[in-house]
Length: 313
Ligand code: 5GP
Ligand code: MN
Image (cartoon, rainbow, N blue to C red):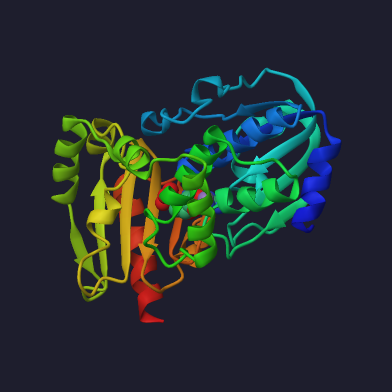
């Protein structure tokens, strides 16, 4: 593990920087990688973003979104630094294999164990974008509107637009600086939270699968393959059930293809990162996820059992 000023030094010394983040990318993953790309280019470096996955359409408002490269498994890329953001290096798909460079890992996930020497993890940061905000200060790269839009979106999406427990005064101060640089908060929320009619309709169907369990302390929506593939995105679905009175843990299970399910959990206090880790995933105390290589019914049973047990402890 290193200090943030050491990370700034490493980046200052590099000429060519490949930047990546986790597969199944969210607003913080895309926001912080693009913010770094803009900032490093501004500092006179060669910088580009590689993400080994499809990109969600609701983030396409970000400047630089169309420059993001989806790499091929057969590509061979050399760079001075591979900057891995918002995840440990186990969730970056083929990027880990095809890029030959020294790794610099910056993350805010408590489950990141710092496998590489040059790792900086601040689990108190609401978003990786918040760490990037501090990093750019150390690197003396001033915010411009592009960087600010990317950072603001990263912080906003990881804090549920500044309402989750991870929102600190430090987060709001960084967000305030982004507004000073010209960000319009309504434009970011209108774009990222916009959903097609079909998606809202699928959300209704998804909400109909709701089950309360663990004596009403947990609620889940369980999307089989058919329902999962009907939804263009499930972004925000879980937020509709985490508000239920008496519910500590909310869970969304989805099954994209046979034998593989994704689980997302949100909590008001219980450590869901621990539950996710027991499935081989990770995350934060109040928001975590994992991939289960199980058929839908079995995955559903496994998740309900694990959550029920965690709530009994
Ligand atoms: P979400 O439920 O929105 O997919 O993820 C919630 C949080 O858990 C995010 O911070 C995300 O990065 C993390 N997370 C989700 N899935 C995984 C996973 O499979 N492995 C790890 N290590 N973290 C995950
Ligand atoms: Mn994040």
